[in-house]
Structures are given as structure tokens and as C-alpha cells.
View 1 (tube, rainbow, N blue to C red):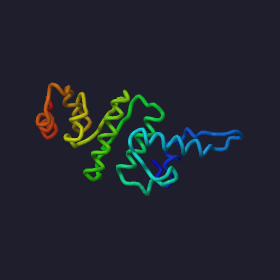
View 2 (spheres, rainbow, N blue to C red):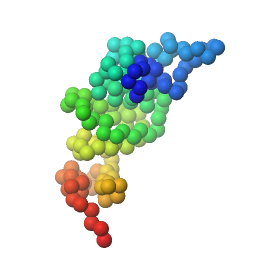
View 3 (tube, rainbow, N blue to C red):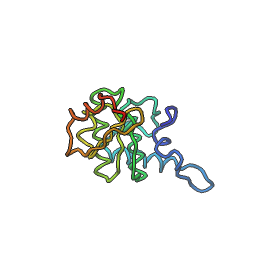
Length: 156
């Protein structure tokens, strides 16, 4: 997200709606932005609010609203809950559940097993770029995953 741009400009960045003569249709983008935010249960003051003025959880919500609005099939989230309050992290996890309900595939990169475990189908554990495990949720537990993460890889 561009911190110095508005919510609606961020949601439509690179896909701006234009009227005749190529002028941006700000009214349509503002309306589309508010509808996209409402669809994920995020009620922000104004589509003109700057991203810099939003909390971390609200910023993640704007990014996820953009994904849903443009019907992405795959989303890669790299540490989406890091540096967020507990409440904001829970909000982001709810956004992720909504993505899944909408049929969007999510790659959730994190060190926080307690955040990813409830919503994941499978886990791929990497150490220094090397895949050391690829397991389905039904075949593992948080404790087993934690052990895989802290155990140094064996080099045969």
C-alpha cells in the first residue's frame, strides 16, 4: 500500500476507473472502495482517508478488500499479523478466513503457529530456504510443527 495515498486510490491503484477524456471517476472509485471494505466488515470513516492514518489491522483490511474486489485467486501474506495488537491480529485472521470462504487460496508466511494453525490446510516448513517438511493439518499438531521449526535440518 502507498501510505501517502487515500484508501480508494490504493484499492484501485493500477486499475483506476476512468470517465470520458480519461479523467478518473473518483465518485465510482470511492463508492467501490467503501463497498469493498463493507464486504469484509471494515467500516472506515472515508475513502479519502490516507493509509498512513490507519492502524496496522485496518491497512491489512484495505489490502484484503482490494484482493476481494478484483477477485484474486491467490494471495501471499508475509507476516500479516506481525507488529499488530492482539485485537488487530484477530481482525486480520478473520479477514483471512473470509478470503478462504470466497475461494481464494492463501499462502500465509509466518512464525506464529497459533495464528496460522486454525486456518491452514497444510504446512510447509522451511529452514534457510530448504524445505524440511510438507504436512497436512490432519497429520500434525502445533507441537510437532514447532519441533520441526526449531530442530536443525539433518544434512545427509
